[in-house]
Length: 304
Image 1 (cartoon, one colour):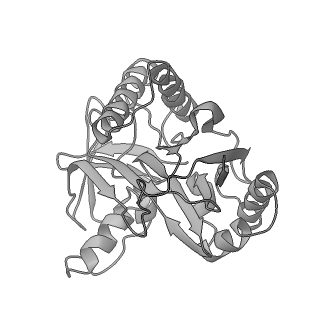
Image 2: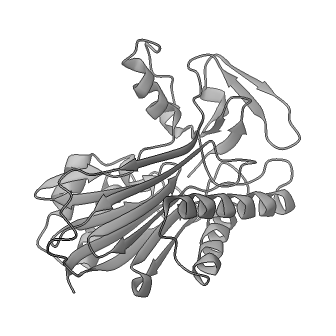
């Protein structure tokens, strides 16, 4: 992900190309440049959670034992000199994670690797099961990436997105920072389970209320939260349900930015193996230009 990370008094943004941002004032800082944008207000959400209860089954009536089989694939894309995506699959824990290092800052690959190594170290002490425990985990990952950034890149820092899912029979927890994504395919419908922490997403939220009239150039490449900052202005923890036959997708934005969701839906719906679908999704992103590193994790939910 070709971006640089910018902190503001009201929030945090990560910008792909500072020169393309209009009505923006850059000030010097000992940690990162400070950017104040005039196009929109930043909204701080320190503790955000959402419980997706849509069509949730009654777990007490007829409990079903499910298991999710994960397959991962990654590719450097067509325009990057290095793959700064990192991923983790732990079938024994029914857990999968994607971290997308920010290439606009130094050490993007190191930031993503630090996040996943810290995750594995934390999992050795037990897997989070409560929302507060997932939020604490995100804070821990952020602190470790931030601390390493002070050592490896003291002037600019470093950053990474992070999305992790953990399946537990008919339930799945998601912890998320940044603009990587988690999807669930069910009954022919593809649902994005995470929200993007980007300026573009913030603008779309505010546009309905009339606060914003236009979308600034490169807004979708400006993050409002990522690992590696002094604090996390956004950290999402989501609980949703799982059913036999569901298909899951975790991916970096190297897939979601160049590829329409309709094409992702068609590919994920194919009657093929998880590995074949993962390879097809990578090929889809490369055919769309492959502007970034591409990482996908495909999961099939089935009775245990």
